[in-house]
Length: 158
Ligand SMILES: Cc1cc2nc3c(=O)[nH]c(=O)nc-3n(C[C@H](O)[C@H](O)[C@H](O)COP(=O)(O)OP(=O)(O)OC[C@H]3O[C@@H](n4cnc5c(N)ncnc54)[C@H](O)[C@@H]3O)c2cc1C
Image (cartoon, rainbow, N blue to C red; front, side, top):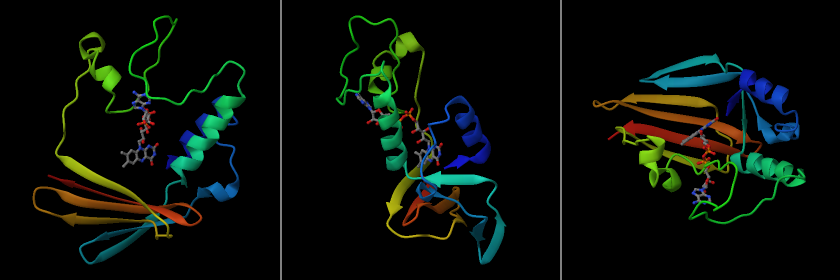
């Protein structure tokens, strides 16, 4: 999911990055929020969605076309011995960063919220469902991200 404003900034810097067929995007004009028995309709605030797999495949294909890029698919267990610059991009749970936390000055602590993030092969009406669980809210957010797939995620405090 990305805002139109953010997408425009990406397109200005890298015109190819989001150049995908129109059908790869899902967009809509209205989001429903359900809270208690109430159903509130609101504007969708200039957002569009795209399947993560489709976007990753597109970015990999772009990188592969570049003369100075060599794509290698493997698990990195140690840093290269010789390199001018090493960029670690192994995600929020980075083992490579954790192993060097003293040098990077990074620390990680677990928050109270737990989430579940799923994809379903059906088209769900874009919506938020909010329910007070006492210690905090249960938040469900669902929206299509392709012509025949939707994201369904929920978050709640422990
Ligand atoms: C539920 C949820 C929903 C989100 N929705 C959105 C959204 O709608 N829009 C949005 O913009 N952002 C969204 N985000 C945030 C977005 O997913 C992250 O900000 C983004 O993926 C971070 O990118 P990254 O490259 O830093 O890490 P990642 O996407 O986590 O990529 C890290 C990669 O490194 C690989 N890796 C790890 N260790 C190694 C290793 N040792 N060797 C080789 N490879 C390794 C992993 O397999 C992974 O492929 C969402 C996040 C979550 C959790």
